[in-house]
Amino acid sequence: MTASPIGTAFVVGSGPTGLASAIALRTQGFDVRIIDKSTEPSTHSKALVIWARTLEMLDGHLDVGRILDAGIPGKKMRLFARGEKVAEIGLEETDSRFVGGLFLPQYDLERILAERVLELGVTIERGLELVGFEQTSHDTVEVTLRDAEGGQTAASADWLIDCSGSHSVVRRHLDLGDRHRAELPVRFSIADVVVSGVPQEMPEPSDGIASNFTHPDGLCVFFPVDDDRYRIVLEDDSIDDGAVPDLTELARAVRLRTGLELELSDPAWLTSFGVRERVLNDYGVGRVLIAGDAAHVHSPAGGHGMNTGIQDAINLAWKLALISRGVAGNTTLRSYSEERSEIGLQIVTSSSHMTRLMTLQNPVMRFARNTAMHLALGFDAIQRRALRSLSMIDLNYRNFGLRSSSSIRRDRDSLHPGDRLPPIVLRSSGDEVHVDELTRPDRFTLFVIESPGTPDFDKAMDEMGGILERMPDALRPLVQLVPIHADEVSATARGEICDASGALRAQAGFRGHGAMLVRPDRYIAFFCGALDGQPVLDWFAGL
Ligand SMILES: Cc1cc2nc3c(=O)[nH]c(=O)nc-3n(C[C@H](O)[C@H](O)[C@H](O)COP(=O)(O)OP(=O)(O)OC[C@H]3O[C@@H](n4cnc5c(N)ncnc54)[C@H](O)[C@@H]3O)c2cc1C
Image 1 (cartoon, rainbow, N blue to C red):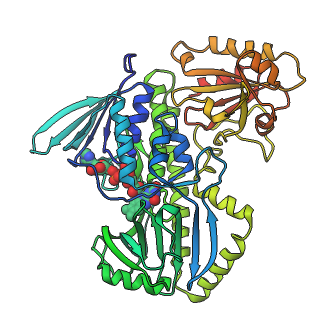
Image 2 (cartoon, rainbow, N blue to C red; image 1 turned 135 degrees about the vertical axis):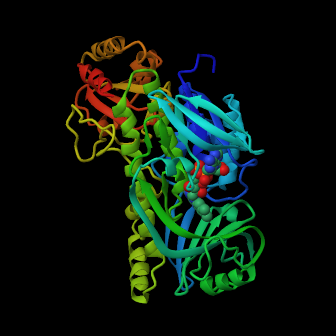
Image 3 (cartoon, rainbow, N blue to C red; image 1 turned 90 degrees about the vertical axis):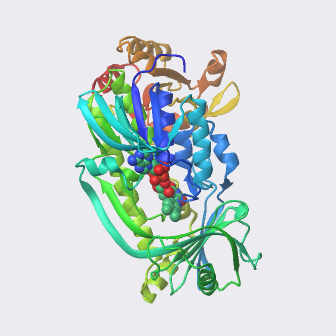
């Protein structure tokens, strides 16, 4: 990065949220420091699933191919009751450029993210603990750090980003309020182990198949960790939080609940946990912002904790960049809390429902659940909807945060401001390109979309070009203009992009030439007619 930094950001914690924060902030042009109190990276597999939306949001910040190459593409999730398969959900095909769910242990993702942090010229400073902080003026945060020998040092930054996990010391010092706080009456044992015995019944982990076995004694789930091991999650109310389960006992329970003569060996991780839920009201005060498990914790059902933290980090970075560049203010800063706290609540609510549903004690309710899932998941449409929800591609900011009413009427089926930009296929010089590939994580993208058979597309482009000229100097370089032609011949002649099928125009709901503004995190900010760009200027002025 050669340009002078737009400001300084201090990231606490080098878990997945902290690493994603460091990458996203650096991509926006910040000078970044990232510290972690632990002297070594974690060796625990913890999160095992990266969902499509997280891959989409990381794309452009790093080569997502590195993550895809390291993981096992998810094929399906199977549900068994008393040894019989009652339902399954396909994990491969969703409305994304990426697989719906990728199995990859958290330490591998952290390694790949840490490599990217280093490539961006940032060193992860290990053995340094944040022990205090103070917002000394309206634009500086002072931090106190303790090294592994107990020595203390001070530092300062424009922004403090707390990604220090569920025991966050920053959160304890701020009065942020809980939007939700609860403890679920379930506990689980965990074992990352080699599973052998009945290869015809239990696929290889590398096949990318997760299996859920429900049983009157409790749930037993298998997730692929890597080519050799499965993660077994066993509902186990007798175990204490954090206790190490006995492998022989665990294997006995697994055999009973699956009805399969399985052998478990070579444990890489044995632990147990109870389910606590928490979502903060506010994800920060002033220049101290909180992301990841520090702001929200919940049941691992659905596998959304780490994914949500990474998405918090990406939501935050471009907003801080706009503020540091002087083109946005408190509305934008507040929108981080509004958007991410609401999403945090949605995720906690759905994981809570999933946990309660899968750990039902009452046999009649269990029978009803199994029957309902068997029937419902027999329909392709319901399966697709389930995967859209799991893969987080349906999350949107339609009703909260930096939303804006569109100046174009929205139909029920058209895209709305606040929606994720879907990967609609366009054409570029005869090749396919997805509309979301045309965006950049450090820019807004203003698509100007031609309506076929309508004159004056050049005039619409001139209008939007003129709008860019009228933007403040600090904002103009942060907005890229992308014309989308209706006709492939004229698009190719100009080396530009074409919406030959009309799919983008149809989903955008335009009847004439239209403009669609997309945020750096690939959510749609705004729609308007392309012959009058004033609403675009008004939208930016409201930041
Ligand atoms: C068994 C299990 C299964 C899971 N499965 C999934 C899944 O499939 N999908 C999913 O999305 N999520 C899953 N999760 C959740 C996921 O592991 C967490 O959501 C994720 O680790 C949160 O990342 P984070 O970076 O916010 O916090 P953490 O990973 O907790 O990282 C915080 C970092 O901050 C450091 N730190 C703490 N305090 C300080 C300080 N004062 N100064 C400096 N450094 C500090 C810590 O050393 C640590 O490295 C699972 C969790 C568990 C336990």
